[in-house]
Amino acid sequence: MFLPVLAMLAQVLLTEAYRIHYGWLFVWTVPYYVAACALLIRALSHEMNPQKRKGMWITTWIMVPTLLGVMLLINVGNLISPGYDSFRYVSLFILYSLGVAVICTFVYGVLGVRLKFERDPLDRTMQAVSSGTSMLNHTIKNEIGKIAMSTENVKRLLPQDNGVAIEQLEVIANSSEHLLAMVGRMQQQMKAFKLVEQPVRVDQLLAELQLREQDLLRRHGVELNVICRQRPWLLADTVHLKEAISNLIRNSVEAMPEGGLITITITADRKGAAITVKDNGTGIPRAQQELVFEPFYSTKGNNKDNFGLGLSYVYNVMKKSGGSVSLESRESVGTEISLYFPRSKIIRLSGREEA
View: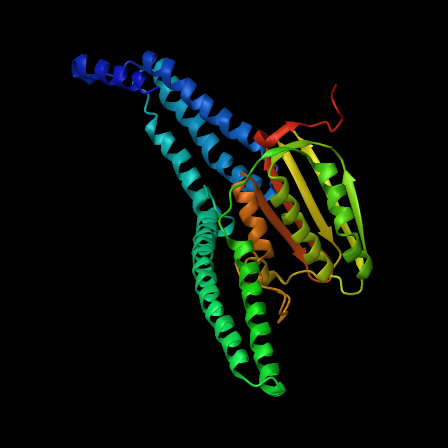
């Protein structure tokens, strides 16, 4: 694709007064401009994630008018009327793109700039936490091993009738085991994992998950409703996808202490697939919504069984799956979290068994 550029450079250098042959320029540059615009519009039409779609709309509005304007003014204009002063008008298109880009950078984010500021630190934080948790787990295992050994030695040295001392040693042993289990759970959520992808029928996966979580739902008076607008087969890791959705269900249950309704919706088309988990719980304050995917951040207060790793794990699973996750929430109304899978992960849209 770079050969036309070199050929055009050679033509200019070999021509008297270094004149540009606008006919040749038109032949090889117009397909570049048109293809660039077509690819932007095609990517926009195939994007399911509303947040990414909004960013791509802005990118399209910035790029397409200017690209087509430059093509018409420079290439077509000079071909029709040699010596045509096109650059005076091209500058207007460039000013238009620059103005829209500057405004949208501050308001929405554009060309990935705002997304980069928000997401890259999160990725680095997760890597650091994963590494730190592994080191902490290794260290604690070693130290708890010493504590357990010392506890057993002290037990043997103490008289058997010294019940108070033995009881205190049991407290130390139980606390050590609890600490080890807690760090193990933290590492399980944050450790670097490798996906083992295989064909998964999403509606069947949700049916299995609904059966697994029915005791939890019944205890808290929560109804789970699954809506299958499509029954796609996806290429995904069954274990991690099921665990990610299970985390979302548990979060929704905790957000509805008086009971309520969770609705899981499956949608899919040639753009991609989405699994949406929606509840009518307490919702998340707007100020906290940008922080919920960060490791160890929790909106649930001082719950000793909650480490603030559930949504971080969901984010990690979707990122490794080549997809994305979005969150919308309103206080006293509820929360909606959507898992988006690209079209490359769709094996087929229909869930009907094939002969």
